[in-house]
Image (tube, rainbow, N blue to C red; front, side, top):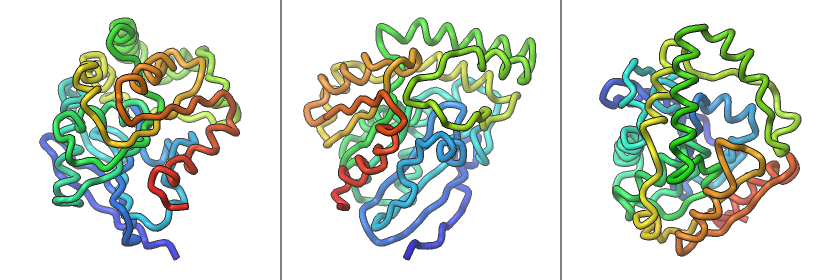
Amino acid sequence: MNSPLQHSAFPVPGAQLSTSYSDEHGQAVIQLHGLTSSRQRDRLLDLDLGRGLSGTRLLRYDARGHGTSTGRAASTDYQWDTLAGDLLMLLDAHFPHEQVHGVGPSMGCATLLKAAVLNPDRFSGFTLMLPPTAWESRKAQASEYLSRAEFLETHGMDAFLNAEKLHAQPPATVGTPDTVPDISAELLPWAYRGAAQSDLPSKKEIAKITAPTTILSWTDDPGHPVSTAIELTRLMPNAQLRIATTPAEVARWPQHLRDDLQLD
């Protein structure tokens, strides 16, 4: 029987993080989401790998400014280093003195990797989805994010959403419902600027992350290129890679998390 969700707000500098916690007396797991998303939106996008997960202590949260968390108009608040600090504070409060399995896509993946470099002993393993652009590919993506921020502030959210519809979707996402950013029009430009100022840890730092890791990627997504996933798998000594090309393969991603947690 699933444990009732416990909802609470967790204070970090400049924000209150909205969290939900399900205690089923098993391994500690923390689940993050991507830029412009939230716990609720990731569920709609089939990126909530913890849905239906049993036998764990699962903590989910909305990053600052996203979903039902609060935030402020400051680009530094949305840099990955800042988000990693938020994550480590959450872990110290909810899972003191124990290792945690981290799961999350895109910005959540980046946040976990940043936190792992800062405190490698904090994590027992990772299930990382959709690693973002990094290193050589980050400069072009940063320019794209800055352009989006300027467009939003000049033309507004409705025009921005109409422009976003023109972008081709990855084949593995066919059939997922249309969603909109789960972050306010006032804060989204600042979140984009924070992302533009961020990059993954250096390759040398990544190579020191020895926790068992599964990396889940999909094809034809310029913001989450397979090249980053391949390079992370090459660098990390205990990483394996799964690449999806169809929605059916993405539907199996929750099973990969259960496998990583050795629940089946």
